Image 1 (cartoon, rainbow, N blue to C red):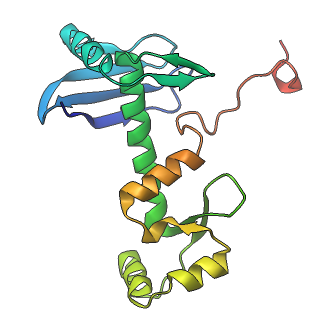
Image 2 (cartoon, rainbow, N blue to C red):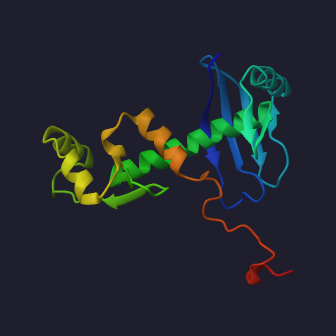
Length: 186
């Protein structure tokens, strides 16, 4: 069974404890319904309600996942959460690849980027193709001190490396309250 999210609408400013989003759920290429969350810490909503049951049944067939050192069964919430995170990661990586060299640095965790230097009159796609044709990957890798340059990888490989090296994107820019942090004193 192939399950995917389409027409994803995400509201970062309205996301408080959970992601505020709405998306169409497609099962084997056909629209099965809509999933949404209001972003205030509550559960996902499924329309029709039977969609949640279908997703729960499917999620039970997935391998367990590890969270804080313990194994847990998937359910509709965790499954949709994974699909949503994948969608956001793909969107972010595609945006970065359009305007920047995206790479990893040996011995350091994280994804780094540097803006393209574009020749006037050339599209970014033409710049990348010219670099690939000229076998400039080795030169760029050396100049950027990069271990791996994601621009020259197949997208699926680049995405897997991106997800391993980047925190979940939904709340990346929002600081989490801490008792030790004076700006969050209560």
